[in-house]
Length: 479
Image 1: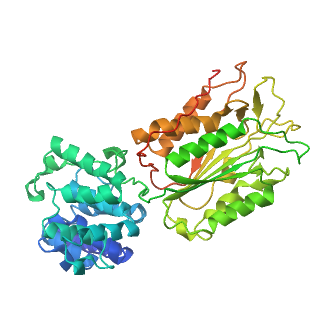
Image 2 (image 1 turned 90 degrees about the vertical axis):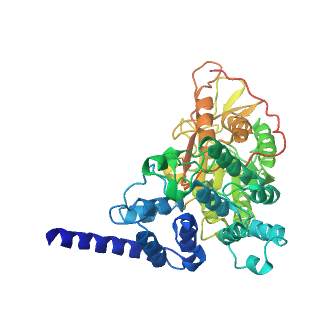
């Protein structure tokens, strides 16, 4: 009786867990789970409308039970419900995969196809699929199911999907190609035929930069026609200030940033010699725009600075947090869930350098060797921000009069070199750290170490441009 009671208690506990999961999911999220389980269900996915119906079907077919809850965790990991996994104390996801890699591929593609892309997909399919099946309310996953039903899409037939993706969002073809390569080296059997041991070998990374060790770490969608706005504020002439020097060499940085981000698909907008009010106004105006047609936003500030702030050409300062706050969810709802990337070239410290061609971006008469940005003051509280700082706290950053700053030049060079190899932005910034840390002044006495701070939830992977990269002059290192 005790064992029987324990079994019933465990089943009841598991049912309560499934109930909590169901209540936490929206209708569209339930549809996504049903789609991922299409190959496991004994009925058509469109007949399953609620989470409880889905879980009942899976339990009836012995795919889900109190003793075997791994499928539930895998579903929540695949759909990136990591907070729910944590809150419900679910066991970590194992390397065993119960969901077809083919289903994961289609789900991954659907997550990166925007509403505008979907309208174009439906337009291209209107001669192959009845128009009533391509209505405004039909989702990407429902389109995929209809393509399968009409034999235009299957695990072994991705031709139509490839053609459509190539026309609408060509950068997503990399995911399809990766799946095809994986399938050649690991032929896929039907789910019913896969044994427990064989399941261990059929996991497949969906993103080009994702591996089985970081499964569930997604990539921000980068599928829009234009990547977004890249704002560059370049403060050079500080003649209105009695303490700040002209920033010779900053025009080199500005030109490099402009050419690189244009190459990456951004619309670049440059503003020169802004005082503090003008800087705030420029950022505020950009934050109020509608960014719904874009994937992200980039803001670059090239100026003198003090701890936690940057200087306007009038000598006054603007807090970094005042600039980033203009792009949080409350002030800029069209950028919610999208990466907001800030690159700050500024420092504080004594500007009286012994080396003739190297200067510090700081006040000329300050007697402190400290950096312009203090991480704990500058990192935005909201999600999806990156703050790329030229140097770690309490250290200077350097600018060469003929070659530009060490940080910005390394950033541009590594973007040009590593984006075509499909590296994510944090990996690129790590390489920037490594490169800049090797540099020093001509006497080998002064060093610099950049530091990115971020609240990103996914990887930032820029699509590989279809045109050759710009030529970036590589400044010589004195290390």
